[in-house]
Image (cartoon, rainbow, N blue to C red):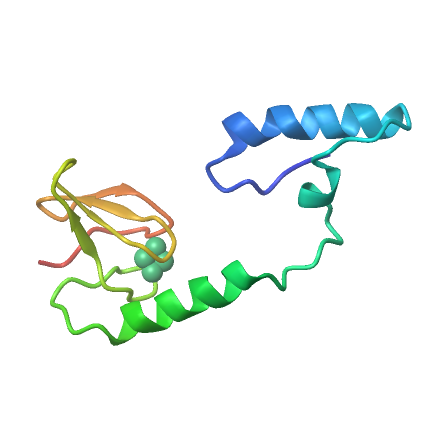
Length: 107
Ligand code: FES
């Protein structure tokens, strides 16, 4: 069973099916290590993400994400407030478009 793709299930379910199918047939799959539950999470990108989250939390701004408080960034193409930390998005009037935030922005 493959689960927990956090909004990326439509694409990663295909890769998961290929990996699981190959594993059952004792074949090697080039993506198996990337999706392995026992893979190491200690990668350079983890430090980069942690640093960006800290910077975002310390950035002076009036717009904060109701999920965990990261500084929201205005997206001029979509006219949305986007959270760089976990991907929540809000309409110009503060209505929640996408989570993990569960509520609207308080403007
Ligand atoms: S802090 Fe914004 S989505 Fe988590």
